[in-house]
Image (cartoon, rainbow, N blue to C red):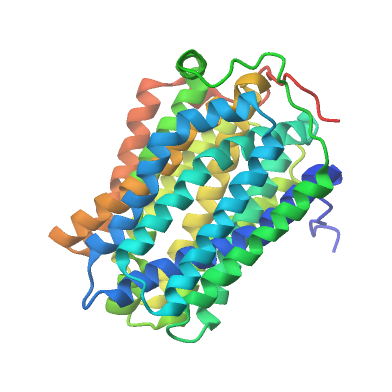
Length: 419
């Protein structure tokens, strides 16, 4: 039995304030992912026949507010207390879920209501994410940052497993209960923020919320090839490999499985991501991160192609699971690179620009996949997306070859130590 790897407490969780935030997010994300699954299924039920454009439209509702507010959200995160910002954004997100539940229970909900409230949710998230991600390096020590982002991945993907599975147990037509449970789940983060107390932050170099502050953030990113290349790769990979939006049609009209099967398909990527995240969180050092990142993106694209060709439930489930594992590895490495190479006083703006890439990719990808699926069919949209992901990676590597040689032991730029 000596060869069996023993799991230990991930280093990041030994930091009290980070543990509170992580545990609160674990609960909240499960509620949010349940809402995502419910919204996609709800839209399919509100249409008389399979309508890829109706499902793709939800991506447009999510990305437009991000484009409008991201730059401002980053400047706000660098100029004001990030913990207080999270209090406000998490409250707004809870109210949005309550409104969606109320409309659904009343029987008056229409597709445009879902689009409008999704846009409100995305607007709050444009301020929430920069503050939340920029705060993580101030909650853990520098050497535990990779562990922290591994745990972030585990929290997100565990929620992405549990949320859709919980939705699968809700009786048909019970989307309102999913929305209500999502609203309640935000209390976990609000309680965590109270327990955390004051969090360190470099506000002495704050530049305020203005055009110059935003411009300085963009200049910083443009001058750092490692950061820029990972952001562009975020966009390309997620834009061309957005199979998630088509899952209701794949489950119901291609694989011929019901809501329970759909829930497992939605959760499959998260299951693979959690498994990969647990493995990375145990690693004391992760070297040759550039080549590992490149291999993970290629595997993600290849599994997307496999999923597009699948006509049976189990092969499709396996393809999605491997996709999730590959995506988790690449996400952890990307986030670690960016946070370690960015000083604290500009980290919110860096995250806000990155938000445009990693949220813009999947949301615009949902629109793209909806249009392509409407023209050429759902399988073609998924397969061509996987191929586009791999081709996009090759283009990025030709433009920014620094990513190939990145190891993980390069100089770090942490401005404020964790307490």
